[in-house]
Length: 121
Image (tube, rainbow, N blue to C red; front, top):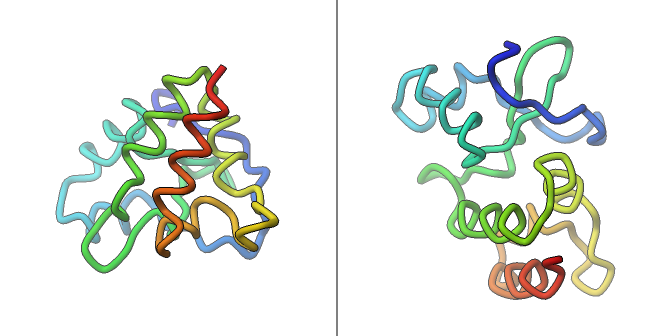
């Protein structure tokens, strides 16, 4: 487990999580590929109960939710650490009344990306 970068689990206990095996099944790839996606910061994961888990909200019926890779790239390229990006993704935007990770499933996805670009430091 030490070879993949995991954020501390600061997320609410009610955030649905998927194991590496569940993500591999969902994406129809190997568990090693999922670990590579995490290591390359294409997916963000936390350590929960000593195991790497990935928030289910990062996915839809077709795989990784549209715009997720781009949003994470904008955050990381803008100076956010992996941990800061994870926290930002789950911080409620009051005017949207939801957090950015959930907003990716709505018509607000492009607005969330615009906000991430504006916050780059």
